[in-house]
Length: 314
Ligand SMILES: [Zn+2]
Image 1 (cartoon, rainbow, N blue to C red):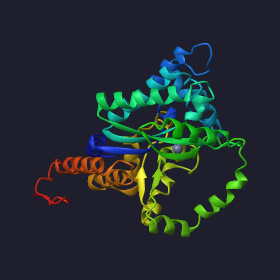
Image 2 (cartoon, rainbow, N blue to C red):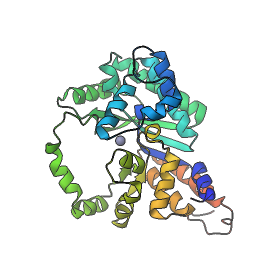
Image 3 (tube, rainbow, N blue to C red):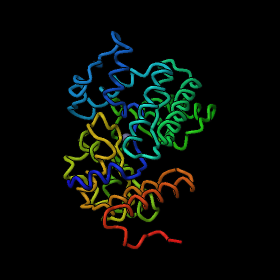
Image 4 (cartoon, helix red, strand yellow):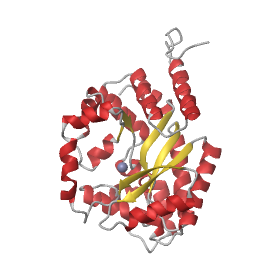
């Protein structure tokens, strides 16, 4: 990877549409939380030991480790620390807007009242915007569990608390204990070219997280990631980071991975960044602003001054 492109990606204004709240806790944040809860957690408080702790044997092991980090988020102060740190870390990668997947049910079953939960993340959201110029929004994640309690509680929190940052819902959570067979139809459909056509025709964008897919063995290796096939089929894709520190990645790194897989130059990478802006839930004015920033950033590339600009000029 050319250093020039690496620097370009680092400075490129970006939006992140698929990244998990607890899964974004950096070793620095996890170590601080582990220290705060020392004696009642298996998670090491030494950042050097965390790298080993975050080495996964398979997806079930990943979920086990993930849940031990979830267990460190026990009160409003933990939530505010985690959320604010994520905003700062994303802003440092030139991210202007991020839709963060939150699982309020995980905190509520640990005794955090719904109101305190929403206050903590909203407070962190406003502070991150003020201090780092990043706009955070929430996707409330319904845990995929045998019972529907988590789904019911998640919906109730959303409707009763109505946090300003909430823009969407997702379905996720632990997969162990949930019969996989009931999803067989979905997986069969995913292998069907008709689904690709459906995504293309209905303009449904996929939030692709390449390193996460490789680390959790959803794809055999990064090199075999189907991102090029998706693009070739005309499916709209965005590039995102999922649980970045746990997979030793960042959003910038995922853009590099995508650039390698798709053989992109600066213009191609910038188009990926634009794509995520377009498919975000950011309002029209916000989209226009970030898209203009991307265009300006591209225009500032050495040798770009004389090139025609894609935007109308006045
Ligand atoms: Zn995910």
